Image 1 (tube, rainbow, N blue to C red):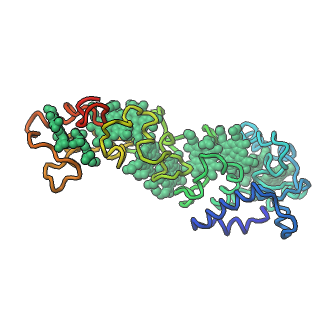
Image 2 (image 1 turned 180 degrees about the vertical axis):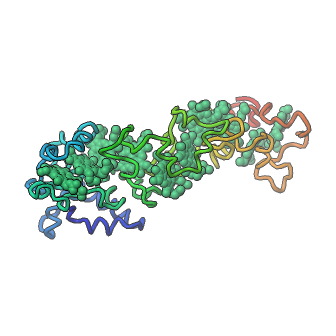
Image 3 (image 1 turned 90 degrees about the horizontal axis):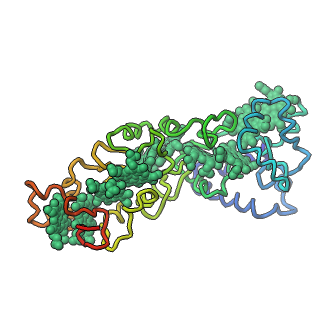
Amino acid sequence: MIPNRSLLSLILRRKPARLMLFAAWLAAALSVPPVSGAADNQQNISPTGQPANPDLYVGADTCKACHSAESTSYERGPHWRTETAKHKGPQWQGCEACHGPGKAHVEAGGDPTKIISFAGLSTKHASSVCLQCHYRSESHQNFLRSSHLSNDVGCTTCHSIHSSKAHFLLVSSQPGLCYECHQSVEPDFSKPAHHRVNEGLMSCSDCHNPHGSFVRHNLRTSSWQGDVCAKCHIDTAGPFVFEHAPLKQQGCVACHNPHGSTNPHLLTSPQINQLCFNCHSTILAKSIAPGVPTFHNQAVEYQQCILCHVAIHGSNTDPVFFKR
Ligand code: HEC
Ligand code: HEC
Ligand code: HEC
Ligand code: HEC
Ligand code: HEC
Ligand code: HEC
Ligand code: HEC
Ligand code: HEC
Ligand code: HEC
Ligand code: HEC
């Protein structure tokens, strides 16, 4: 068992403040060597949270003798690479980096109470084992405050070390993995206009970071919502000399459904003029943007707004978006 398990589980209860504290603790633990003269169990704790004493470890080859299936999956996966970091202690390497020191387990002929089994760990505790190594990567910095972890969805919910048949050690591949829990978004990706996620052309994780992020809805980026789209739709995002305000304020979702829509171009409204009237009301008092001029007769020619206002995402030459 991890000696300071009680500390971990105390800290890892849901409270964001405690999670922050854990992050700080991890960071501190990793950069500051244990203070000599501290309490006994602290002296023995390595940066991984597991005892540093090399006598407690046997190495992955010993485990192989009795656990051939897990050893095979381990060797096929990426984690054998931990063994190349010889300058780190054995607590950072092989099976024991995750399952804890194994000597007692081996000497007792495989006593299951003398080794960390993930079957017995809470989601948060299991995740903390993984984060000991992975929290440094940019992708995982927000995991402790993510809506996934706070809803009991942890590393081992989506990843399997020993029985994955998908990329990135995923339990199953996207989008099926995500649909298991997010059934409500699934129909969007079968609508007439949709991002081709089911076809495998892109994945949920192109736009979302399943490990959490700084912005709403676990979106990958950033200061404004268009960024996540601009990665692929560069021409729509500007900057323009004449910006169309909603792109910078609400982002692309002011007019588009990002997953899919029954309307062309993933638009939120079947009729372009209705979409524009949401903001450019003909009744000036209700309008949050300039009302359409009175000569915009909706009988015929002024219905298709984008016939004239072609550069609807913004323009470098024209304040009313007639030209790009
Ligand atoms: C001498 C054979 C032997 C060796 C060597 C050995 N184990 Fe085991 N291990 C066992 C047996 C037997 C069990 C119990 C299996 C069961 O109950 O189904 C077990 C169970 C486990 C479990 C599951 C515990 C549980 O609660 O189900 C884990 C995890 C484990 N071993 C990891 C390791 C690791 C890591 C190593 C190397 C450090 C290792 N074992 C070395 C024989 C061994
Ligand atoms: C990167 C962390 C990691 C490494 C390295 C690792 N395991 Fe595991 N192990 C897990 C996780 C997580 C599970 C739970 C099932 C799963 O995710 O596939 C598990 C499950 C097991 C089990 C089944 C009992 C249980 O805990 O559910 C055994 C036995 C086991 N591992 C042995 C080994 C052996 C032997 C090695 C080295 C050859 C090894 N593991 C390396 C993380 C790891
Ligand atoms: C001792 C450090 C360590 C621990 C603990 C650890 N990992 Fe890793 N993990 C690594 C290293 C090293 C790599 C390989 C990185 C590379 O090659 O860039 C890796 C790679 C991965 C990958 C990428 C797989 C791929 O195909 O690119 C996943 C997913 C992963 N780990 C999940 C986990 C999970 C889940 C846990 C906890 C059960 C865990 N790791 C625990 C060190 C660790
Ligand atoms: C909700 C599901 C989910 C959870 C929870 C989750 N992952 Fe992932 N993880 C993914 C997916 C999906 C990918 C593939 C991302 C991509 O396509 O870029 C991935 C990729 C990775 C990678 C390789 C690429 C990268 O972004 O670094 C590592 C390492 C990894 N995960 C580790 C972890 C660890 C450690 C945890 C827990 C702290 C965790 N994951 C929790 C779904 C998840
Ligand atoms: C093209 C980028 C993109 C892709 C691909 C994408 N999303 Fe989204 N998703 C978004 C944006 C943007 C929002 C925020 C919408 C808003 O602000 O109204 C969102 C919102 C969500 C939400 C929260 C709101 C809701 O509708 O319930 C969930 C859950 C979600 N996405 C899951 C998924 C899953 C699962 C996949 C893959 C099957 C996926 N997304 C693929 C961009 C994307
Ligand atoms: C085991 C169930 C589970 C799996 C698998 C899962 N999620 Fe989630 N996800 C949740 C829960 C629970 C929440 C938090 C409640 C909510 O917002 O719906 C959540 C939240 C989210 C949110 C934020 C929604 C919002 O409104 O802010 C996004 C985006 C998301 N998940 C995307 C994904 C993606 C992408 C995948 C696949 C890589 C995935 N999830 C896999 C259960 C899951
Ligand atoms: C990973 C690249 C990628 C990202 C990120 C992305 N898209 Fe797309 N998008 C595409 C591709 C490729 C198409 C082409 C349509 C297809 O797949 O059939 C497309 C199509 C579209 C269309 C329809 C175009 C048409 O001619 O009808 C709209 C609208 C759109 N995306 C908006 C968005 C929005 C809004 C976001 C951000 C929430 C976004 N996209 C993020 C790749 C991306
Ligand atoms: C004010 C409403 C509005 C906003 C906000 C908006 N769009 Fe559009 N978008 C439209 C309309 C209307 C069309 C249809 C244009 C046409 O039929 O020529 C369109 C078409 C598109 C197309 C397909 C045709 C093309 O021009 O390439 C893409 C891709 C697209 N938008 C992406 C985006 C992205 C990415 C954002 C955010 C940066 C965004 N849109 C923000 C209204 C908007
Ligand atoms: C989400 C709200 C919203 C939607 C939807 C919207 N607009 Fe706008 N639009 C604005 C705002 C806000 C301004 C900027 C007003 C300002 O700068 O004072 C603006 C500016 C404009 C301008 C420039 C007016 C000027 O005097 O500078 C035109 C033209 C325009 N929009 C046309 C359209 C058309 C056509 C559509 C439909 C395809 C549309 N808008 C959809 C909010 C919206
Ligand atoms: C046949 C071409 C045409 C169509 C179609 C058209 N407009 Fe215009 N729009 C114009 C002209 C011309 C102006 C005046 C430009 C100027 O003042 O320099 C204008 C100006 C505007 C302005 C700026 C008003 C202001 O006070 O700054 C808005 C907003 C606007 N249109 C919205 C729309 C909307 C919404 C639609 C669709 C319902 C639409 N337009 C359809 C030609 C058109």
